[in-house]
Image (cartoon, rainbow over all chains, first blue to last red):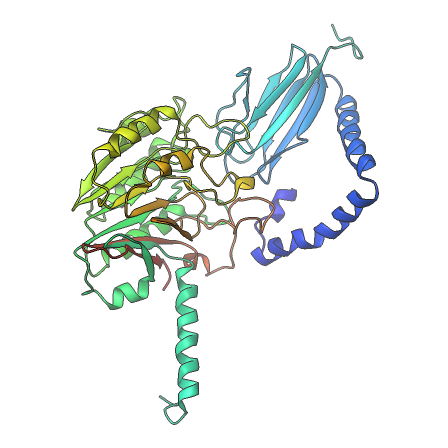
Length: 142
Length: 318
């Protein structure tokens, strides 16, 4: 839904980063460590609450979000493309590779082995993300 | 005419305002390339149309990023705007020798998209030289459909060279086997081929290199550059005139570095925002009725005799 806002008047887009910049700078200046740690922690907490069955990654504005998702082994992760431009989801180690995802298309993959999975969009390789798969110790689904 | 009694100052103002308006018009059409001795320069399409008898023994045309099949808000009918571009080409006072298409012919590499594009482009009645964009390699076999259709006589993923009127043209492919976190990529196989391709050429041979993604780094944050582009350019250092024509970023950008002139063409489908001015490089929606000012074609003139290439960017709306 956020991405729907993107095709608005270009001047709006042009100015937005300028307005955003000062608060970000201020935040980093005051409590940089807290900001970064808090963010990582939030992502992890979200993954845990998302339970061991489903993980969700949105593709929008040429970014994967969350950029890093931590899930328990056995979790199925679904990527959805919210952009007006097609993308793919391709693991660096070739463990998975989606077909081309047009707008609203989805790709799912179930992670059965723990480890770190770096992935990227093979069309726009500056788009990168990571799935961190933990052994299913917390949930214990069998 | 109503202002005929006004003084020269007002007249000057009138002229410069017109100049400004012409510049603005460029911001949306196409690029007409004219090779004038060796260095490229660009003119407004209106100028090109107004001066058909200029010294242009040899011209060719560049179109790019047709994205046939794209139907989102930024342009619900990319085929219609391609049709307009072709009509513009057919209306040029001097018929170009040929056309190059710098990739993203289709949006999703579907047979129908390629068919529709071919049908329209054929209507221009010009030989066409293609290089693929990343959107042209989305078939299940990752590029086979493109090669079957456009790759006759090419090497590897579709690169090749040819000569026309003393100019050496090189079509490169930098959209294959892209690496995580990286930019466009030529690869060692293609670079080796390139080295051999230019090895026997005299340094006075004008070179025109074309590829989809810019060979120079425009904006790495959005992937707008080519990882090993500098290696390709280093192979051309000894040449007196090198012109690099790209697409991909859906807007005109130019740079001259030594003997090398870089130029990117507009799309015929939709504009993209200038680097860093939006949250992402996604399609830019412009106010209704303005789209054709952001789309276009390019014509290049070549005139033998040590002068620059003249590149004319022509918006679809003029």
